[in-house]
Each structure stands twice: as C-alpha cells, then as structure tokens.
Image 1 (cartoon, one colour):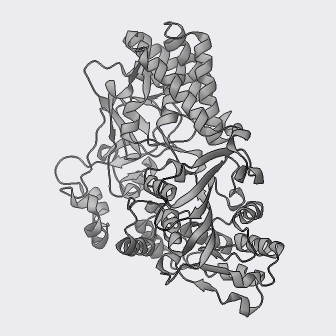
Image 2 (cartoon, helix red, strand yellow):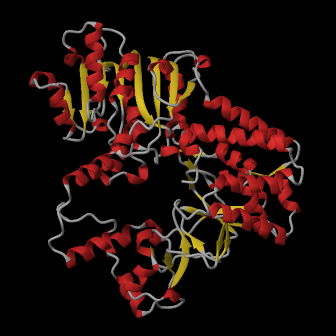
Image 3 (tube, helix red, strand yellow):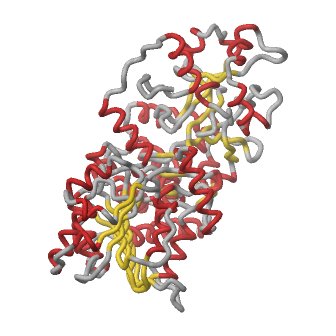
Length: 567
C-alpha cells in the first residue's frame, strides 16, 4: 500500500479504507517520522547522559570507539569531545559506527561535514556485520528498543540468521537490544570496555538472564545503574532505563565470575558511575532483600498462603487476531452482528480500575462467539472477508476447527492482568464475562472458594508487596506477571475466616474506593479488615510493610508516580 495512505491498525480496515477512499490523506511528516522511529526502536540519547558515559568509557587518547547504532549522534559527539579533551588531534579517525536508518546520516553530516571523516560509518544493519578482527576497545551504545512482538518481518529474519551463526544462548523472544549487546562483543578487544543505555528489562527479564550471567564471566567489573529519571521523555517515551558499564573484557572468560554492582538513582549523575555503592543513596537490591525477609518471617509463622492455594491462573482466550474478533458494541452493530453472537470480555492492561466487575458495569469490548452450528449470514459474510493468505499463515487458526470458533470461558472467579502499572490488580468476576489472553482468568483451585475474600486479600499490603517482589520490571515502570508468579503471590490466611456475606461487603467497600481513584485508602481498608482487626499482625507491623511497599514502588515508578500509583 502506498505510504501516502492514512495509516490504520489492521489489514481489514486498510482494505475498507482503500475501497472507500482512493485519495486518502497524506501522513504528516512529523507523524511519519514518529512512526519510523518507533518501528526502529529509536530513542536518541540525551546529551547529558552521553557526556557522562563517554567520560566513563573513554580513558586514553588512543581509544578506538564503536557505536553500533549511532542515531542522533549524541554518543559520537560526546566521544569526539572526550577524545579531544584527552589530546586527540583527529578524533573522527578513532570512531566507527553503523546505523540502518538513513536519517541518522543527516545527523552524522552535521557532526562531520568533511567527507573524509565519514569513511568509517556505514549504512547497514549492525547484526549483519561480521568483523574479521576485534577493532574497538570502547563500545558506546544506545541500541534499538524493539520488543520481539514488535519486530518487523525483516528484523525477525535478521535475528534468525544471527542465531544460526552465533546461537546466542538466550530465548528467541528476546528484544532487539539484547542481540546488539551480544553481537557487539565480537568487535571488542581484550581489556576493552562497554557502556550501554538499556531498558530496565535488562535486569528484570528472564530472556536477558543468560546474557547477564555470561557478562559476569567475560568482564572483570560490571556496574548497572538504574535511573528513575526518564531519559527519553523528550522523545515521547516513558521507557525506564539502566546503564550497563563493564570493564576489562576477556574473550575466553575470566577464571572466576565477577558479581555485578547494582546502583539506583533518581537522576543520572557522574558519581553513580564511579563511587563505591555503599556511599550512594538507596540500593534497590537492599530494599528488595529487606522486603523479602519481612515476608519470609510472616510465612515462617504460618500467616500466609499462596494465591494458588485458592485460585488457579490460566491464560485468557487466544483469538489469533484480537482486532478481528474483539470490537466495541457500536462496531459490531455497524457490521450487522447481533448481540446474541457476542460475549462481553475485558481486554488489555488498561482495563478500568475496580475490585469487582459487576453485571451492571459498562463493558465496551465484545468477542465474536457465533452460536452453535453454521454461522448466520451476517457473521458468515464477515468471516469470509478474512484473506485466505493470512488465514493459512495463522498458527492459532490452524489449531481450531473451524478456524473462527474461539473458546470462551465466562465462569472464571476473577481476573489478573499480565501487566501492571501502579499496583497488583485482582478483579472479581461477578458479571460472568470472559477475557482475552492479555488477562489471566482465575479458576477455583479447590471447592467452595470465597472469591470475594481472595479479592479483598489481594489488596492488602502483604499481597501487594509480594506481587512487587515476584514481578518482572519492564519499560516505563510496568510490572509483568507470569501465571506462575500469580500463583505464588502471598495472601494473609485470615481471609479463610470470612463468611461469604462479610467478604462481599468488605470487597464492595474496597471496590468503591478504587473506583473513586483512592487506591491507597482501599489498601488501608483491606489491611484493616484482614491484617489488623483479626490481629494477624499489629498496626505497627502493618505500617512497616506499607513502608517497604512504598519504597519499592518509588524505586520502580519514581517518587511522584508512586504517590499516585493508580495509572
């Protein structure tokens, strides 16, 4: 399709728009540029961060620097300044760089107007460059922040070929930045250093764990600085970042592995890259350790039970194409699809804030679930519009007979989103609705489960602290929970003492507060009902737990967002 046509989200909307409007509006240049940068995972490094990194990494007038995705050239500019400061008379000759984005070369020419200085910069995908020898003793990098699910087909083909050559030793679903990090080591000389700007998922994601372990074998010293300051806000991104600083590289590995030093800071300052971490402000690992010790003490005294003792989390309905199968009531009505062919669903981590989903709540998403037997004419016509080529390539469709018959469970006792921003959310299903696979449905793990008591317990500070420790931190401060994590969330055993009526009443009180945006007050009410009044713990102990929880949230979200963490 011509790039002059208005962008739309799904293939079938594209087709409809093309048929309806041959002369679609031209995309505004700034919008097109934003889309291009997002698809390439481009977030230009702020100059103050680039300056600090270059000063740490470049220590000798003879250092040779590689930048594998130079983008806006902030790191290159800082490298030039640092080399000049050390006495280099031709710093451009000591730089090498790659970028797949032709726009990056416009920035490069501003930095190096002389063609002679551009010889060592190449328009190429860094992952397709295979060095004959190790040329760099310093690598400065801000690699593309592209998650696996957001990669283009070309990017996926590239990483498939890279894995064929290098293996990697990590999950196929790793983000693109991890491939850049791993590949850069092919260029690094013995004794060299790397300084990378990475998303905070470097520390939290499972797929990065093998690389973290490998780096501790290859480098003599490693420091990871978590930065609460959003370095890419000027680019319109909420991505949380960390700085990976590794020194004294040994290609065959050191005899003994090192242990990475973890440091956290509100705003990036030079001393965080050099000073003894004991002299710095809050260390997140220390906070997490203290919080875990507190929960371990409660568990040892038989005051906690895992959520999995009561409810079993399962992935929601897998449609294979959410935009095709899930729409608003208005959209379905315009297509002539009757409500009898639809099932109400919740979808996405942005689901409305509530503790109880009620039958009279306004649900704005509905999934196509045709009645048994052959679909009626309106449904059949809609299904027939799905292109055969896309249908044949869809692995989810191949598992179903017929391909459009999506399973649908409306008997879940509750729901938990897989992604959380402010707090751990467990929503009680009191409306007999379903959910898509961005949500986990909670099925009874035993008979006679009091779902209202479990929902109330999930709002206590104990459960919230437990979820905070179990979750994997993603960009923007979001938390990712796997079903196994949800099962392990600790709940106070006092929930088992509540009758159904009392649990429903207490859960309703908490729900009202949450709907008003008073999440902190809702948590305090849950604490009062399940922690303090049953004398499971004292009011002072409860405050101690809240303090630990708030400390972790501040580290994750930043102080201002943690104080209003209902986003």
